[in-house]
Amino acid sequence: MTLNPLMTNTTDTVFSDLIASQGYVIADGAMGTQLFAAGLDSGNPPEAWNVDHPTKIQAVHQAYLQAGSDMILTNSFGANSFRLKLHNLHNKTLELNEAAAHNARKAADEESERNGRPVLVAGSMGPTGELLSPLGEMTVSACEEAYARQAEGLAAGGADLLWVETMSDLNEVMAAVSGARMASILPVAVTMSFDTVGRTMMGVTGQMMSQHLKELDLVAIGANCGNQLADTEAAVVQMIAGLGREKSEGETSNDVPSTSTAVIVKANAGIPEWKRTAMVYNGSPEMMAASAHRMLSAGATIIGGCCGTTSEHIRKISSVLKGGEPVPDIPAPISASTPSENTTTTRRRQRRRQRTQNNDLRKRPVVP
Ligand SMILES: [Zn+2]
Image (cartoon, rainbow, N blue to C red; front, side):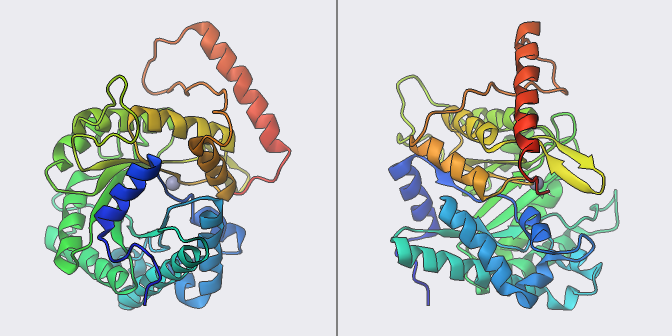
């Protein structure tokens, strides 16, 4: 039984109610970063912890909810049969996805009951890691089947929507959406990762993504992960334009936009760097909150973080978007991949600010 007070409504309604009442939906931050901090070995699949260490997974969800997330993603990013097969866990696809959704549902329902607010559970479905034929050996139907199986488990465990994320290939996205819809009637959201010179690894831009996906009746599309914050932001702006969601002058965030597809941004915490054996991120909570504010002003309404973001980042994003504290005075990052018109002075100032942020980061433990 669910305790979510708005579960009598559809997920679409909960989304639009949240966006209408507060102007946005705050998603969560990284899961992997938190699990490595909790002792997960980098060679082991995080999805097994849904069954082996459910309370550790629930604790990550709880921390994000306490930080202000309105929506949490299940710990099922790699829980498709292709990826689980690498760990000989493919026969547990249903079980692991159901457990992932159950863990998130439990944390969400407890938060709803405690604070009387709706919390959405999004069933995370990452890429298969395979290439579709003719580039690779995976057929469209095998791909659809893998996502259908995953969606079935996530729906059974209590997910409110399905969240196809960190994708590179539009054809795999189409197969994932189609598979998700074979198995459930839940709304579907899609994010892609613009980590290769402003495009996905397969060459997709934000504009191409919105053009291809806008007829699919998705609840939301957007960008997540990525390599540089500037590229992720640029892709999101392209999508907003592609969907016709730009804000006109005088329009507030509560005005209803022309399309029902919302735009998501869930960027990494700055630029990842290898430090010895660990991946660390240079993005402070202030930097992510400044970015969240820019993206909300541009028209994105579902905002969270990806790799390197912690509950500290989400707390800052939540506080700034709520107006509880001023927007950090951190300028938009300049992309190293797309030439910008910024002056040398701006670049110099940005480098100085970057150095200050790095110094701040060095003072506290950095969790990859
Ligand atoms: Zn990420």
